[in-house]
Amino acid sequence: MKDTFKHQGLRNRLIAVLESKGVTDHAVLSAIKQIPRHLYMDASFEEYAYKDVAFPIVANQTISQPYTVGFQSQLLEIKPGDKVLEIGTGSGYQTSVLVSLGAHVYTIERQQELFKKTERLLPLMGYKPKYMSFGDGYKGLPQFAPFDKIIVTCGAPFIPKPLLAQLKVGGRMVIPVGNTEQMMTLITRKSPKEFDKQVIEACAFVPMLTDKKLKDW
Ligand code: SAH
Image (cartoon, rainbow, N blue to C red; front, side, top):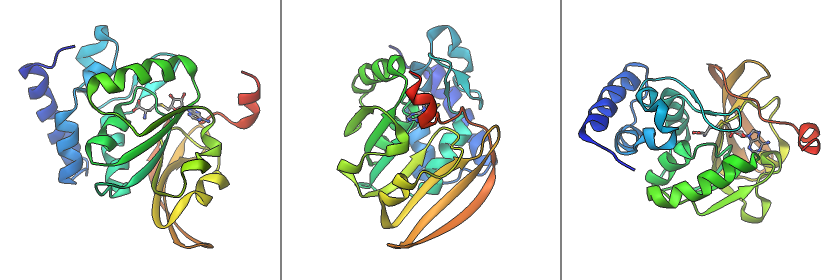
């Protein structure tokens, strides 16, 4: 596994693109600058790693677009030591950005092939989450709740109630809500019973598979 000056140069250019699109948080940009995104993709697609596009990985899934990773991370306002729940581990790239921001990450993936691949990759990359789970993101991880932050990296047809319940008071959740197209949505928990909802912008993610589909495994 190699990270060269050429890759670092391409990452510097990518950072400029993300800044122009509104990702301005320095900690987030420096995490993206440091993480070799090409190593989370198939080697034959390396040339696409530093373009600002989503890209196919195994099991019909995608590695999120760098802008999306930057934007969601920025919305979360991660502080070192934050306990973060991530739904949709995928390639582990977003996970690595969160770990590099100092978060303690608990992440769930429902595709077994992808789960196994990323479980092997992340320790090698040096961005180890606290806990990786093969399972259903709709349920969250109640045994580790509450979380300071929750990030959903697949398109959720609705906001799952268990995830709201697992968010700390004062905590933030970023979730793309919708079916074929989604709206990036920021939820803030104001009190045990009060949630503030801010709809931010349109986005496109692979679908968060529902319980019904999960039964069809
Ligand atoms: N953050 C990832 C993006 C992966 S795409 C990255 O940077 O690579 C979204 C991922 O969500 C896919 O891997 C998909 O398998 C997973 N996913 C879909 N529905 C899910 C569910 N119900 N629970 C957990 N993961 C789910």
